[in-house]
Length: 158
Image (cartoon, rainbow, N blue to C red):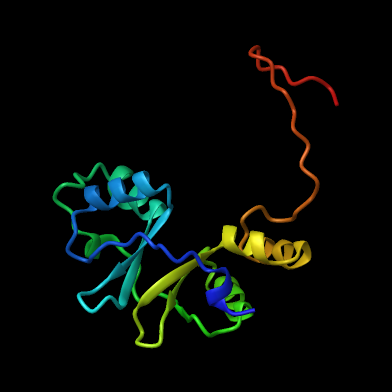
């Protein structure tokens, strides 16, 4: 299975000189947790995550109006090509402890993105379990038991 077969094709992105507040609006409006950052030639130069916004802007009480994406983005960005086997993307995610991999076309331009959600939909459960455990998303995947917590804060006995 190739990256092109499971990637999200309509990728929201931003530019290095965009204001951080505008990038956050794109994330909110598109309901995404990361934006590839592309240069004028549509080649990825970095990636901006919601975590970057939380750590670099919110936690430091910075004004996002005056910050540019290039100031807080991760660069270089780990990418795969659309013709690569999806396992290459899984390996990249595991090795670099990332949850999103921008996908490049023949010209090296952004054509898609693969996220942990894309992999969950496309791969068998065992492969997904291995990936998520290696990304430390939830550590070990054991059956999840939902517990109702009353407003008093007392958790009922199982």
